[in-house]
Length: 114
Length: 114
DNA sequence: TAGATAATTAGGACATTGCCTAAATACCTA
DNA sequence: TAGGTATTTAGGCAATGTCCTAATTATCTA
Image (cartoon, rainbow over all chains, first blue to last red):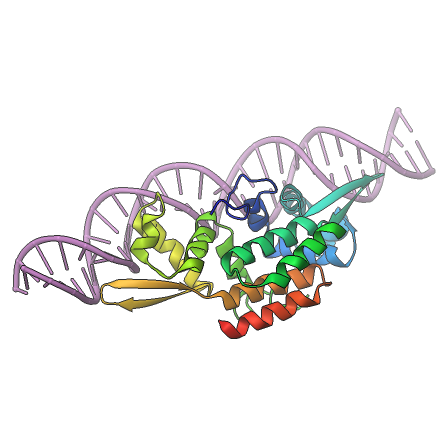
């Protein structure tokens, strides 16, 4: 029970990750970014929502360590960071059904790629 | 983008699963139940929280299809249901980083066990 | 049947979230 | 430098979530 995925204040904070994933909009943003990096504006275009609201979602995702931003000129480019996401999901899956070994290996392989 | 893990109204409703997982208390309940089935009272004992509050968390988990209850006499026994959990997590992981094949297989193997 | 125990429902207080508009900041180009 | 574009910050408001106590329902046992 002293686990990263259950302890809200641990390293990458599983709490922030699961909280970030609890919003459909934010999961969609991650799905968009899994195909390619996008600017804040390009992400906002894909939603029927104001830019500030999208920006807020991006902040939540960034604080959870699920995306990274890079400013280039007047644009901010957002990129997915799969490392923390996969580790958190797999860590929790392992904890809740401690059966699958390959899942764990997969997670570690993924961690190296980022 | 027409995926179960992103569509809030699809079958098992990934939205309900992710929403259920966004609470540390609920993740802990799942972790407890992964070790053994427990009655509502036994679960409540493990938290510094009123029984009605725990009951509410159990309802959220049940509505997400993550646990099942069975009444025996005056007790209600709760059991984890890993199927939906693992499928949802793996489905989303697949979508967001469509690399790992073994992860998928693992999910399907798990689905059969329940 | 009466009283005790297990669990849930009901209803309300309080905090958080999610969305908006308006304003501010940062950068680019004429 | 002035004006335009990209993005975030600030502040407000409605909806939701989480917890509580009190009351209710269901079951067991003397």
